[in-house]
Image (cartoon, rainbow, N blue to C red; front, side, top):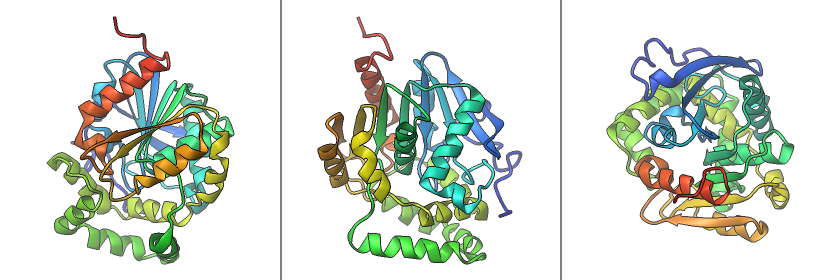
Length: 297
């Protein structure tokens, strides 16, 4: 898929550009941002997003951590992957390969939405062994009801039509429509965030990756495997999330004795973009509780 984002043009004012570099790993050219010093912390964004999602949170975390945040395959400025590479096991394997190439072993991992599922799969497969997995509105369970019967077949249909990503990019590039899409998440984000999302949805390659990811996403196996998750799981839930039902966290917690739920009143699916200071403080608190950071005097 061509028509991806060009770093020299689309990336000239990308958030935290000074922290960006490109790394060859797992057959892909990855866009990775790294900043700060201290224990290693990995940030993994969700479907249809990119490193811009951490634009305010990452610098706050960099006060206490070495923060690493990649664009997932086909997303943002990372090169496209074959369809099989957009599945949950494919994404987990590719990201493991990136970490091996970087020679890093994160002690705290934070995943938003689908990013949390990728990190859970990596933990289950032995690709990472962090002290804790922090799920920000994590998409860890299959969708049920009408969305479950509608979205997956639609995504698979769209993925089978070569011109669909260009059509979707053209249609979704309407700023008014983008505002509606963002509002549906239950979140209100800043103008810079809207600008970056608009850049992303206007890229056919990025759209193709998002569609392909949804079309190849199977969470039933992950749901069955979650009770074997070998690390503590913290489910951070935006109370008005319009994308992943907050009730999903309750279902997950019932299956994992080592899981805890932290609710964020008044915040939606993009809680970390709405209240980066609050989410950073929460992550730092959890890192101290797990011994990754020293306790405060």
